[in-house]
Image: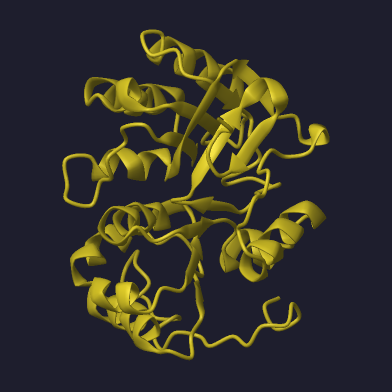
Length: 274
């Protein structure tokens, strides 16, 4: 797919390793990542899959190399942990979008492929990240807000709370999605965001795909929870945004400032106009 799209792919040395439920040992995985971060010839790192053990290597990553030579990092799911850590430590903008195993390997729909390629080759610029009307994104609570777009997989956001890798959520536009989680666990994670003060501090909320353990669409239930848990901070909320563990999966820049005006169907890179 990458070569067909005009890129030159360089697989990690240990990309096919196995270590129980992990893709190799912690040392193998961190050495692959650091080698690519330090290689000036590598301009983008596309993660093969989420990777349950990514949190295990956060303390082994060469953050100085990222700061010295920023490059594109594209992934989602458990890669959320790395994206949030990089946002906090390096202010690095990363791309949340399809990975090679799963969605890309199975074949992307045309709009997901278009957004992915454009994210890799075009400047972020002044893009409106609101999807087309045909994709069914809903206005759950009206309003306007601007802030840095942060977030990703809900279970990883909550897993990082209380660590040195969790970002400051104050004034941010929070994006959440998840897969394989029953409703009671989603409720528990949203409650954790509530009790930790995250939901009281955000400026806006974007709900992506929520897919249950049996592949059911949990959008309606999650919408109800989101409104309930933000009743005392009535920020603008959009739901059913086509991003996450189901297609279409639109690639989004994590760590950029976006202007959110849900009545005008705007989620534009940059601040709200004065």
